[in-house]
Amino acid sequence: MSQPAIYFTGLGVIAVCMLLLWLLSLRLGNAAIVDIFWGCGFVVLAWLYFALSAGFLPRQLLVATLVTIWGARLSLHIWQRNRGRPEDFRYRAWREQWGRNFVWRSLLQVFLLQGALMWLISAPLLLAQATPAAPGMLDALGALLWMAGFTFEAGGDWQLQRFKANPANVGRVLDSGLWHYTRHPNYFGDALIWWGLFLLGAGGPLGGWAIGSPLLMTILLMRVSGVTLLEKTLAQRPAYREYIARTPAFFPWWPKREG
Image 1 (spheres, rainbow, N blue to C red):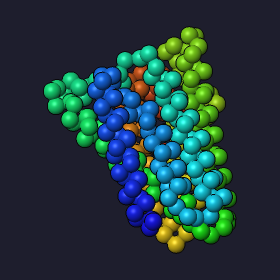
Image 2 (tube, rainbow, N blue to C red):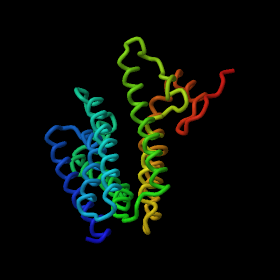
Image 3 (cartoon, helix red, strand yellow):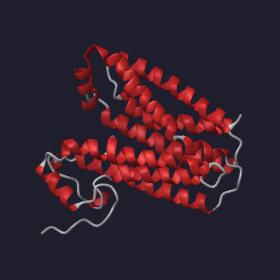
Image 4 (cartoon, rainbow, N blue to C red):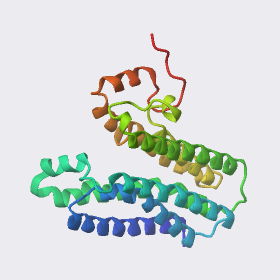
């Protein structure tokens, strides 16, 4: 099967997954389950590409395994974070705004839109697994970037989870550990992971065109669904405004000295 055929097969599979997930959300009355599936959706695509591609087997196994570790951890983290809580405020706001049209608009603007983004971003996973050449320097660099990104993302989430679990921290801002150097280590790590996955497939003849994947993911994390959206609410707190004044938003660096 050709790479375009495999890629569009992935589109069909992820569309079916999102349609079923949408039906489940109607039954549960909770559209936030789409966030839980984000990581797992890439796992589905990674193993689909693995099954249909005929590239260098060790690289195929590496890519599918790295995506599984990342995606499963992310989905489990979001599930644990949302368990027992009401629907995320974003979707509750859209329910009120869209009224009776929420059912169909959620299908198009929440589930199918996220599915389309997932499919577009997954391009490096296919190219990396379809590349027949043996690993080289780009593969080594990609694996190192993935490891660094996973450390920032998983480590940042773990530190924040421990911080929030302590009642003494209510109303306080986490500014230690990885959060001392960037206000969003988890988002920075996520972006780094996708640059690493891109490099794993960049050595192939068509690898370069997939650069749109990490670029799109980085833009989403910095300007759309990540930093910008989250800080609209957080920036209303005086303590967080002080944190903003001294700590980089995305790329880690030493914070500014007070005074």
